[in-house]
Every structure is written in structure tokens, then in C-alpha cells.
Image 1 (spheres, one colour):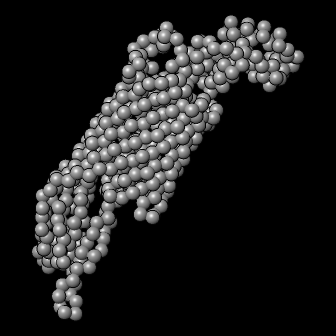
Image 2: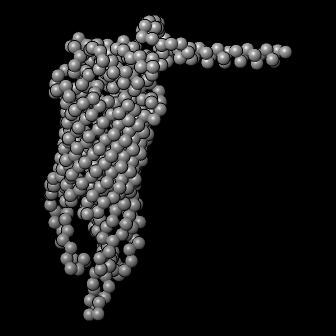
Length: 459
């Protein structure tokens, strides 16, 4: 008897739940009752009920300015920023400007990484509202950032196993990739309401070693030259907001490389080498363009670039697709596909990234790239891989923590799996019993770990 009564009570509760959940759909919706009920729910901050009522009303073609404002606010208060954006944008289309809407829209764009739209909304606010949202804002500098990092290479240790494996009379030479460190700094400006400008300077210091190895019979001859390669890099980009969610971004990256090393001149007989110490300076550049469009919970970017790196011309064509698959700003994916051309040879580089906001103000990203990464650039020419050695694949993670809306920090751990191809000359006796050196090559794998930390401040 008790069991049967319990089942009956549970059944009644379930029925009442569905009746209450669909109460709005069971009655006739009119402009008057939607206006009155939505205002009452808005005033009492019953956000979930307001969302249910508002969506049913719009589905029933009852649509007006104040409903969009209330519905957008309900989504914003429940941290559903994508539908909040669409409702606020619709309200501005059919109604009039309201600074409270712009404030909510400003933060909604911020939390969904629509930086150009956020900056445009900020530019049209009154000075009093600007001071309220960003008390330190000034017309000269929008943001500043700094980053430093180091790369740890096992090339020197691993390379000790290569030369003893050479047999017979042979000669080889290669450049060893050692540890490095770098720092970069930059500023961002908002000179006009639809234009964002960034300026970046980077300094890289790479440890390198040139090794030559000659084996003649039982005798081995080896020489090494440790030197430093310095790179000064200057990057400039413009983000132009053409229309809502539609951005065009031209960019340029100039790189100067300086080395003071021993150069060798290989004669007919590799055992005879002349050495010269010289300082060299070479210029490299990248010109790139990105076009992006935000559509609901998606962002599509198309990249194109032309570059001159390591005395070779390259061109790249890439597509990036960013998605928030669950409609929440707390989880997103990015997929990159890049077609890279050099010396009439093309290859495809593929990158997959996952992003997650685990707790308040903390965001984690994990990524992996596969393909032949050499004389290559990413992120509209901002990141450059210009070492002669090939990166076969890489993966890593980034942690971003926001101390406030003004201050954030990044920490990056990156693994690169590299391959170097270097020449090997082997001697044999020809019909005249004279030594002839035949050219060949060897492949060698090593790893590089990159650690970096950066900080960014918005005024």
C-alpha cells in the first residue's frame, strides 16, 4: 500500500513538472501578456523562466525591443553569452541605443574573444561609461605586453652518437641547434573606432655549433665552432572591423639574423678545407593577410602569406575554424589546415587545439601540429619557424589566468620533435686508384622543449 502511494505521488510530481514547464506553450501568447509577464520576470530576476517565455514568444513571431533587451539580459546573467549577443544586436537593430545594452554587449564580446567588436563597442560609449569600465584607459595605448622564454635542446647530447657510426673514409659537417632564450614586448592602440593596431619587438639568442668530422683510415679529425645567432624581429598588424563580426587583418614581420662564425670552403678533396671567420647579416620578411567572420558560435578565418626565409621564397594558404560546440564560452575547439609551398614542393600542416575554462579566470589550451614545419609561419605571420631544421610534429599546452579584466598571464610548455639532414662525403678509389668523394646525406632526430611566460595589461 505504501509503495503504491509513493509511486502515485511521484507520478503526480512528474505530471505537474511537465505542466508547469509547458505552461507558456499551452496558453495563447499575445503582445500584451508577453510584455507584462516578461517585465515581471525581469524585475524579479527569474532568468530561466524569462528565457523560456522569450524564446516561445519569438517562435510565435512576437518580437519587440524590450523583449530582446530582457531576453538578452537573462542570457547574459546566466553566462550564455552567444544568445545574449544575438539578442542585444537584434535590439539595437529594431530599437534605440542604450548604454546598459552596450555595457553587457561589451562584456559578452570580451568573454567570447571577439576583441575587435568589443573595442568598437567601447569606442562609441560616453566618456563617463568608458571611465566606469576602464578607469585607466587613454587614447595613446590600449594595452602593453611582455613575454620571455627559453628553449632546451638535446641536440648536442644526441649528436655524439652520429659520427662514430660513420664508416670508411668519410667527411661530414653540420650545425648543431643548442639552447636559446628570447623576450618580446609590444603595445596595442585603438586610433580609430574600427581599427586596432599592434606593434611587437622580439629578440632571440640561439646557441649554435658548427661541427666538421673527417675519418681517414683509423684516424679521426674533428673541429667545432661555437657561435651565437641573434635575431631581431619586428611585427606590425592592423585589425580592421569592416562590419559586425567581419575583420580584415594585414600584417608584416621583418627578421634580421646576425652570426659571427667560421665559414668553410669545401675543395675537391674534403680533407682540404680553408676556414674563415666572418660576421654575416641577413634580412627575412613575411607579408600576410587574414580575413575572419564570426557567425553565432563559429569563427572562420582564411590566411595567406608570402615570405622570404633562409634564402628561399615561401607561400602559405591556411584556414582556421573555431567552434564552441556546446554553445558555451567555457569550451572551444580550433582546427587549422595550412598548405605550404617552397621550391615547387607543397606540404600540408594540420593543427588541432582544444580550449577549456576550468575554474573562474583560468583557461587551459592543448594543441598538436603534424606536418613538415620548415620556413613556416602561424597566426597571420606572428609566430615564425625559420630554423633550417625540420619540425616533424609538435604539441603543447598553454595556461592563461586573468587576475582581472585588465591583467592576465600566460604560461606555455611546448615540445618540438625535429629532424636534420646533413651531408656525408664518402671516399672510394676510382680506376686511376685516386680517391673520389661521393656525396650523400644522413638524417638525425632531436627534441626541443620550449618554456615561456607572458603578461598583458589593458589600460
